[in-house]
Length: 349
Image (cartoon, rainbow, N blue to C red; front, side, top):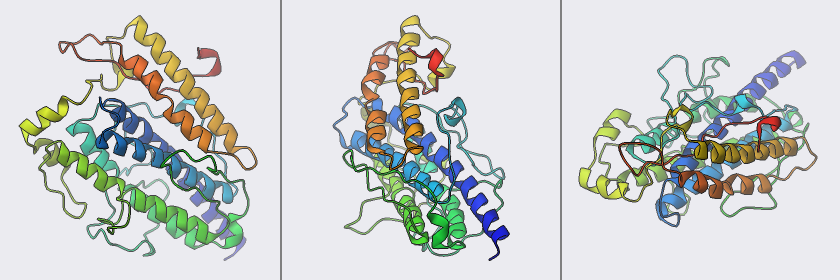
């Protein structure tokens, strides 16, 4: 391969990796919002939501390592890095109607959206990772996240080990519990291993072996069933509208008693109060500083990601302060939630 073609492949790979990092990050606030709405944070349902959010943070870091290894860079501390919920996810296909992701309490609506996010890439969930994918133009977008990662795999496969030895690497020697393993990318094999782990943890290739951890998709299926959902899900194939409308009403009514009724997409809410505005600004100030620290860490030699992950999930106590504020509603139990917005340094408290 001549140098011109190699540079084009590296550039396309870097562009896709930047979208990937934005995409992985954009799933974390919805997962955390749902997690914080669960009254019993020690429950299995809450544990799954928190672990998935932590793993999404690790996926973001893995994609950063591949990007850095190719000499690419990313700035993540600016307002445009955080989606304006509700929204389509970054990079979603322009050829089909995207599903909309918002900040919502845990419910049938939100869990089915999570299933759409983590939908497996093929009708046959045991499709092999190393099967070459079709390399679509950069602006074509993804139909499933796993499809997008297969495009990245195809680009990585065209490069050499020497193309992955150019940049600093994030690490997590200070490991938060259950956050996963983050390793350095110093070869093509390392980059492919990163992508394989992201796909397996996220969408998966079907039900995992008995001794393997289940993918995010099938863990969300379990939550859907616990809610009383009875819709058909077979080998990762499902109809989202059917899943939302097909459930045992009695089981779901009992499940809802375990959930705090949070205002959906609080940035859009017209019933804001002074108390909420202050607590939400405090939350967003801390969240913005965490993104600043994460972005600064990406620019350091041998940066440490564990502290940033811990900071992300220490936001819970600030979210709880917001959630203690009642929101005016016909339903008296409604409460506000954090809006997840980036604030410039001069806007923070």
